[in-house]
Image 1 (cartoon, helix red, strand yellow):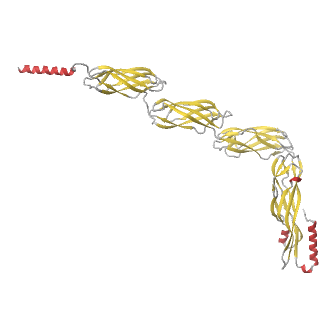
Image 2 (tube, helix red, strand yellow):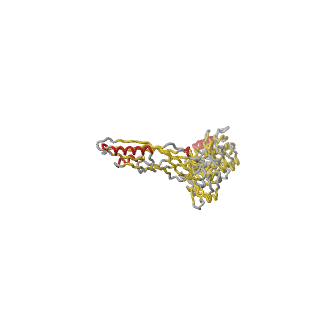
Length: 541
């Protein structure tokens, strides 16, 4: 499109006349021309109620009125210091321009520029609209030159307004809004719920909503069969109508907490039965930290070597972030112990709530005293009723004490003397935690002591009860007046029916002094000696 002002044309005529009338200037040459910038837009259609770019194409097809040096011809046709802006106040439509004046530099002859404006289109009626675009630039109007002459340039400034035509189509348009918190716990699944609205000017038929998660670790469907995208069919959606769309989504356990984008697109049939697709619609999913539990107030009972019923008590705490239903805590990793009761069901736990748990193990006799680490697994149901399990067990350290005998000797009483026999009473205290039955004691006497009755039945014994085991004990005639070491062993049945034995319980048996007269053995020896002496005397006589 040619743009030469009337004043420019008069200047051209004057310059040409002067050149023709002046023989002295016949050797001089002059190039005369101007840029010719046209405006168009490849964005033929706009969508209502959205922010979108508007691209404007400026094309320069300059004019030459008087030719000459090719470089000067290019110069007079080039537009310098080009600026462009959209005149919002002249637009007869609810369109807001968010981009001001743009500087484009130079546009040579035959060149173009593609500035982009950010605009917001309101609730515009379908139809055609003209967008006014103001273009301003400087240029060299003429260049005079010749041999031995100084090159002279005449410059000018041009400013004009052109229109680009755009069309707002009669078509569906869509918006998505979150219909819930759309939060999922890392390592778990949940629901992504959105409200789909048709904000366009025509009904959408046979629509299909596709949701895509491009972030690693975010998926749709189940953890066993994850997918990066999912689609839901919507048979029809009228103008201004909304519908709810809900899909199953999830996040791997290694996904960091935060918000992750989800892209929605709607495919639908237009009036001609041709499938069209909407622009990308943004929604998102929130990933919360992985569900966690902890154990507090951990205590142990009878946690010693060679214990058949060592007990662990604790409080299991739901550390969140979600409500956990049907919580079950299990003692999964108890080596080197043998689990005898390893599962505790505690029901539902809201974040921050706790419940008591208890477990029992058998500690073998070959376990070394010291610290041992146990692993507790937690299984629960999420909000959808799906069973979940902690990916990492809760580790808890417990101390194992040295073996402790359940019986202690607290008193020993006897009146045995050398060469005599008497009753031996041994008081035994039971220090176990649970009653035992069918208890019996056996005496192991050492020289110079012996026992003709070394067994004693004790029956049922309660914790911290003291019982007396009675035996018959004898001391040889050469026994001295002192205590002699012996031992007692107790056999008993535990509540589970197993028969166990105490260790060898050492005790001292005191042998007392004989009461009255000389000892029989020394007297007999004296008598024999006397008889022998009399016989000798008699023989000599």
